[in-house]
Length: 328
Image 1 (cartoon, rainbow, N blue to C red):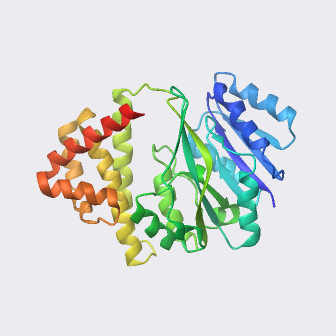
Image 2: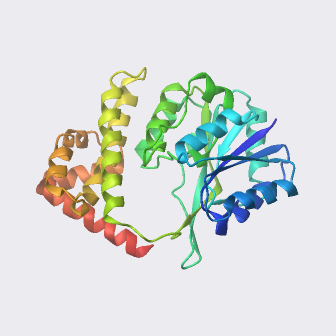
Image 3: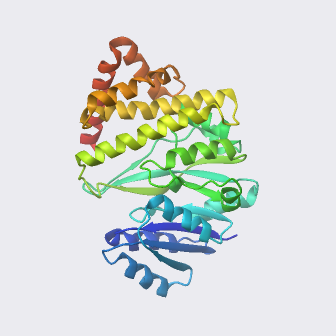
């Protein structure tokens, strides 16, 4: 069984070699590593070529800059593996036997289309490593993605990221499960598509993936506005799609609750956007999502909303978000 690692690379020179070697050192050896240089200008492309000369399992693709989604999509189309894994070039895998563990699960149940795994966060400024919230134990059992999603949402732990899954490549191609181009938060609509189409999955508390944090602390006004606009677009478009999806009513309720959580994120940053008053009106059109409280984080936000109104909830979410940033 061949596993394809898809690694988009854009100006990641300080972290790229660590990322790649954490994969090459996996005890399960039947892998291909696809490094896609997305128009890097910092020498990352040359480093990709050097690494490929050292290990025949590495393939390098060079392209003009297209962005993360298009680059991942190109990697999926180029991959030869039975299963694929996405990795961001500034992150890494934790232990050398992680892939062997995941492959053994597929070998014991070849029907599995998705195996979700857990992650850690590495804070480079303090050298701290923090585990993400564990999954519900029931998720380790095979189920449909709809059932798994309802459990994930009810626990407040929804692993949207493509980097936290081993996925059957045939399934991605069959259902055209590619990433939307040009969006911040591209994993959100992609993950919702998985919920509709994946028939067999499980999520295990194996802490495989490590997200490197504090790589850049520069958050500009334009970045906040862009993040708001893109996430607002995702909420608007996904709300429209929910009723058209071929999913159970319980799954629809969970999706609405999941989107309500994303809405609460926008409420936490709306005051920092350039056109805050108009953006508040746009958010208000979707405040009805807060009635879907299967997600415990949404349940708390909804309670605050009922107690002190939308502006009060916005203030509480904003303060909470600032406190979390300081703790990091």
